[in-house]
Length: 249
Image 1: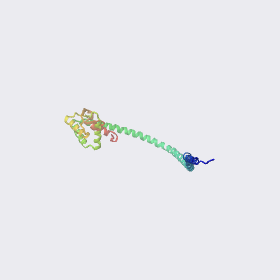
Image 2: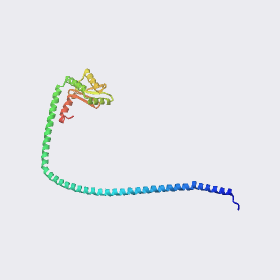
Image 3: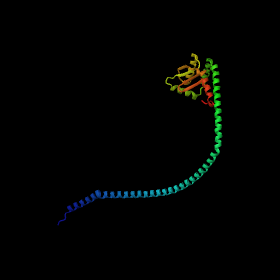
Image 4: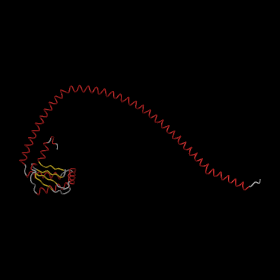
């Protein structure tokens, strides 16, 4: 048998190529799969250790919480016993107090009846006094007095505080027709109406047409309504103010 070097060299080359193919396409992927598996195993072991540590921490926390609950339960039990004792003592005291208060309640009822009777007498006297003063003022009322009250109103308008000016201006802005309703106990001449219009315009920041009406019940003076804002300058409203308890509006 004759040895063929060419065939030998080709076989060696084939073997080397086969080794390269195995390393390139088989051995290296297998190594990568093994490395990935080893890394996954390490990660899972680390996760398992973490879960174990967390479980131990939770167990410790649970034990501490049980001990705390036991302590709180004991404190609540003691507090409940103290509250019950206090309630029993308070209940007995209330019973004794209620028995001793019966006579005092009777005295209070008698005093309330007396006070109610006195209050009714005072109210009747106040009503009579109000009627007498109203009758007297009605006899004194005149167009001249109404004109004097209007002058005082105009002076008060000019000296209104900033907050009241803003309230009047806001009320004027909310009125769709932008009209000031003026009720007067006596007829107002053109000059008085113009002065009132100028005074309101200075405060409201805009011209407000007047809707003037007569209201003899006011006795003397005027009552001006600008939207929800009401200006009282008449004897009827002043008397009503002093007629209320403690002068409250």
